Amino acid sequence: MTDEELQARLVESADLLRGHRIALLTGAGISTDSGIPAYRGEGARPGSDPMTIQTYLGDEAARRRYWVGGHLGWRAFANAAPNAGHVALAEMESSGVVSGVITQNVDGLHLRAGSSHVIEVHGTMRRVFCLHCGQVFDRRDVAVQIEERNPWIAVPENVALAPDGDVLPETTAGFVIPTCTVCDGMLKPDVVFFGEYVPPDRFRAAESLLRASNALIVAGSSLVVNSGVRLIERARRRGIPLIIVNREPTRADPWANVTIAAGTSDVLPALQELLK
Image (tube, rainbow, N blue to C red):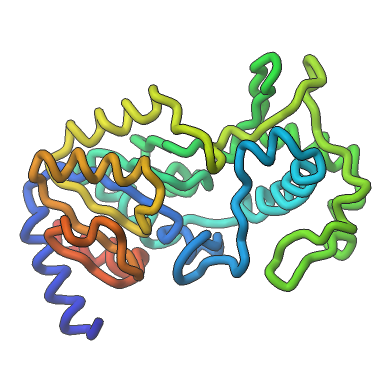
C-alpha cells in the first residue's frame, strides 16, 4: 500500500466513523510493536505451536514445558510497554470516541495504556487459578513459587532455547511445576487455551459493548479465532461501519467498509487525529 493509498483509506475511514461510538476488537497484531510476537502473520514466532487444553491436562511433560516457557514469557510480558496503538485507543476512550476495547490478547497492555473499559475475552496472564478448588492467585505469587522451586530458572544462561525461541527439553527435565498452595491441585493460567470455549459471561460482556456501539474497528486480528468472527457477524447483521486494520488479509475483509493493510501503531494514532 502506497502512502497515498493509506492516506485515502484513513480519510475514508474517518468519514465513516465520525460521530459514532466506536468499539474495538484487537488481536495480537496490536502488540507486536511492543515486542510480543504473534502466532500468525508478520511478527509471528516461527514454528510456534499453541498449547491445547487437551495436551495441558493430559501430558505432564508438555505441562512442565509449558510452565517453563510460560514463566519466561510472562516475564517478557511484564516488561513490555504499551505502544502508540494502545495509547491512541486509551485516549480516544477518554475523549468519548471509543466505547471500549474487546481484546483477544492476554498481555494486559490495553489496561496499562489507560483504557478502562476492556473485555479480555481470552483471559489474562495476570491471574492463575486452581482447577481443583478454584482458588485464584496473582501471577506474581506463582512466579515466586516457580523461582523458589527452580532457582536456576532466574539465570537466563541456564535456560536452553531452540532457534525459534522455544524451550529445549533438557531445560524442562528437572523443572518442578507450581501447584495450588491451598490444596496442592493443578494450576492453570487464566487464559483460554486452544480447544477451550470463551466463558459465556465474558462473551456476553463483549456482545453488550458491541451493542452499545455503532461502529467497529478490528485492529491487529487475523480473525481466525471463532470468538472474533462471531462478533464480526453481529456487527455485519446490524449494518454498522466496519473498518479492518491488519497487515495481512482476514476472513472478514469482504464484509468491511474499509480495509487498511498497515500497522496498528501507525494507523490508530492517525485515525485519532482525524477524528478529533
